[in-house]
Amino acid sequence: MPLARIDLIEGKSAEYRRTIADVVYDKMIECLGVPEDRFQTITEHKAENFLFDADYLSLYRSENCIFIQLIFLDVASPEQKVAFYKAVVDSLHEKLQVRPEDVFFNLMTVDPPDFSMGKGVGTYVNGVPTDRLDPDSV
Image (cartoon, rainbow, N blue to C red; front, side):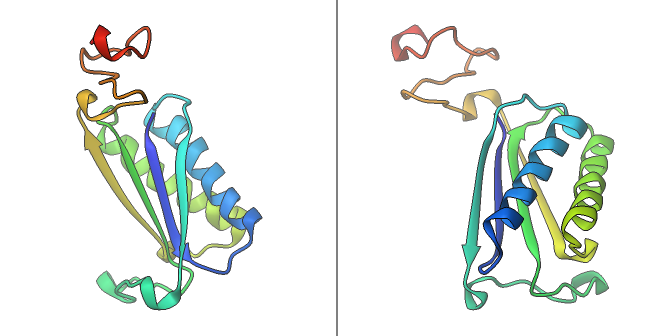
């Protein structure tokens, strides 16, 4: 049930955007050990609304920069997170020729009660999914 947000400058094909989403999804499961639930958004921005420091830490990002943000339960070790970064970058480079410097990550971890999967229910308030999405059962 992680939420993945992917942001990039407008103009890429639907196939290109879907490939990014698929890579992020596959590598989240493979590297971070998150559930196989898919919740993702892909947002395209006009160039003037997509701002980044093109040479922060001497990485020299291009206009093809991609922001990837995950919001998920803190189930992964620092080593798993680093493996995730590398696996996504390598796969995007292989499949779409994305420059490794152009992939920016931000992982945000939250507590189980920070998710409601629908109906206004605190799905994981007790640390495990509720059997049914009934607001009166939690």
